[in-house]
Length: 194
Image 1: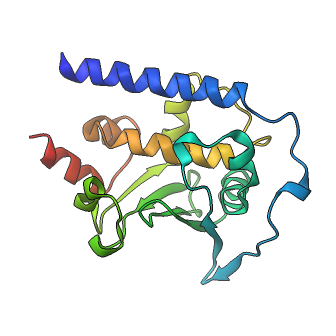
Image 2: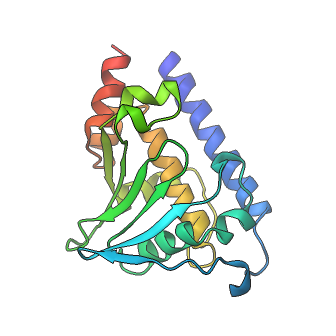
Image 3: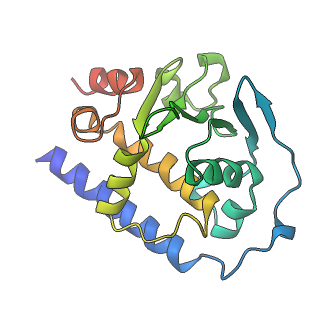
């Protein structure tokens, strides 16, 4: 009963977030609004930089699309999943694209050491990760009627995927079995809810 209520609340939040995103999307985004930060290539992985949006949950479409790191990662997801990564300012998470030699690349979120995590509730996830195939995350977005064209809004698309992965930890069994996710973050969530 409680599990069903939590799932309903999560789906409602995702739908509201999708509608909010769609309503607040910019009509067009000029190249002049994006920062001129450069990216670096390290061992075949493009480092897109640090996400500069401080409050991702409250970010507008313009803020998401104006963040060169998110846009870089989003474009790399859209364009054949080129290996790349960003560092999130909130809790120093590393958000990356990997396993690009397969037909379905992996999206991964890694938590740093406990000393690098700012929020107390996130410290329990220190040195853990969640990794999901792109198709699994996209299928969840489609189930929640996420109605955005990734090509139009690569920064928003990258954020939507990241946001969805956070919700996938709430039901580790479903994340593993239905969406092909894996990782030690799922183990932590399972142990917290025993």
